[in-house]
Every structure is written in structure tokens, then in C-alpha cells.
Length: 125
Length: 247
Image: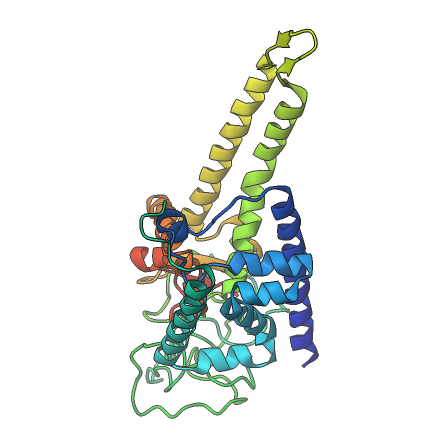
């Protein structure tokens, strides 16, 4: 148990350092849209907002982080807490089961991104 | 090439992969729900469902039971790790456990540091010491064009050369031994799925090119090992490579 907690502490601190670093970097230089799909077509993808989750966390704005992509936020929390037994459960689940969960998560995330960012207006761009 | 016995090896004391079987011991396949080639951790529940053909009729091992089945009791053989990299599977189908996504990401970052730091130093020195910014004085109307001194140009070229050279060297290591310096540090290796041998420089290079596909689907390919049965990226799937733990 203490080993699992140590692993969580390592993961948590690594993620915190990365988040603060990314937030600082973003404040100094905003590279704009990173998502190739959104950059090319204007349509957001299910993973849109994932870097924003980290940037907002690094800035300490938890609400904005959750709003940017709740599915990424939950998945990140899952990765953080995986040593507690979540990881074992994940790899015990059948490949088909994992596929279904991932597909459902991506669909939910895409729904949220389309709601949040919307489709490009016809004729725009 | 194989690793010497490691006291910190969690699998220490277990037989390594692919030792010569003793005569008279019938071959034993992985039990149901067991990952082929992967020794169980004591007390850990078995991982399941990797889609490998399983041999029917072999009862599953109870968790916490002494290891059996992947290595038979040996006589006069020292315990070893997985015997990677480079050796190939010593028995067909005896695949070591796949590397975790975290270890792969960590190795990638380490390699990026190794390849990136020296060229970056050259570029920073060139930009700070040998580049003059253009200067326009609005009051007098004088304009002094900026420029790069020859030493700056040389440093830029050296930096580019260092980046290309280091990148190719890391790729050569990966292709010939299965391990970049980062992968070595994290005890993982990229190998051909079919026989467990290194990819070779050419295929390692093509695998790098295939990472473009991992980027194209919104970077989803990079995350694929988080749920894939063989923990492969898209590039791994195209090349038929797997990333495994070496100890």
C-alpha cells in the first residue's frame, strides 16, 4: 500500500511540475491550436482541450481545467490513482471491454467539445 | 546478450525465459487468462485476455503460488532477467511483459533531452553572442542592419549537425540493440513481435516515420498503448514491433 502511495506521489509531482512548466510556457508564448483536425477543418476532436486541462491546472484554475475536457481530467485522475488497484482492474478487463470504455469516453468527449467549441459556421474561414 | 543476476530484480529467483527444457517435462502453455511469457508477480491477480492462443486443459495458477510453467526447474543455471535485448525469443511465443506507457513516455523524454540539449546549447550561444539585431533610430533616421557573424553561422551549422548526428546515433542504437539510451535507463526495448529480435536500423527509421500517423489522428496513436492488448502505437502496429520490459 505504501508503495502504491509512493508511486502516486511520484506521478502527482511529475504531473504538477509539468503542468506548471506548460502553464508558464503558454503564458510566454501561445502556440495556438495544436489539434491538427481543428487547425485544418475547424472541427474539434475528442482530445481537444487536453493540453488546456494541464495549462489551467498549472495556473491553479481547477474549474477551467475540468471544463476544457472533463474526460481527459477524469482519465488523468485515473492514471494518477492507477497504482491503488485501478490499473490492475483496467488490464484485467477484456480487450473488448477496454475498447468499449475508450470508445464511449471518446464519444462523450467529442460531444462535449462540439458543445463547447461548436462547428465552424458555414462559409466561415 | 543477457543481463547478469540482479538482486533488485522482482523476478529474481524465477527462471528466465526460454531455458532448455528438461527431458520428459511436457510443454506447458500459459494457463487461461495468463499472459504468455510473463511471469506472475506473487500475489498479483493474473492479467488476462491478450488474445493469444491458449492451451486448453491447463488449470490456472492460484495467485501467490510459486511460479510454474514459464521456465522449468533448472539445474545449475543462474536466474536471469528476460534475456533481452537482442537475443530473440528463446522459445517461440515466449514474450516478456509489454512495457508500460509511463516507461515509454519517460524513455522518449530522456532521449529528447539527449538529442536536444547539445544542439540547443549551440543555438543559444550563436543567438546570444553572434547575432546582432537590426537597429533603427527614428530620431536620426539611421538604420543599421543586423547580421550574423561567421562564428554564429558555424555554431548554427554545428548545432544542426549535432542534432542530426545524435538523432541518427540514437536511432541506430534502437535499431541494432532494441534500446535507445532512454529505453536502456528504463529497462525497456523495442523488438520485432515475430521473433523478439531488434528491428534493424532501416525498420527503426521507418517506425519513426510512421509516428506521423500517431500524430495525425489527434495524437490518439500515442495514447493507444494505454488500452491496446499488445500496448502498441499505430507505428508499432504497422511495423509489427512491440515494446517490452527487459527486466
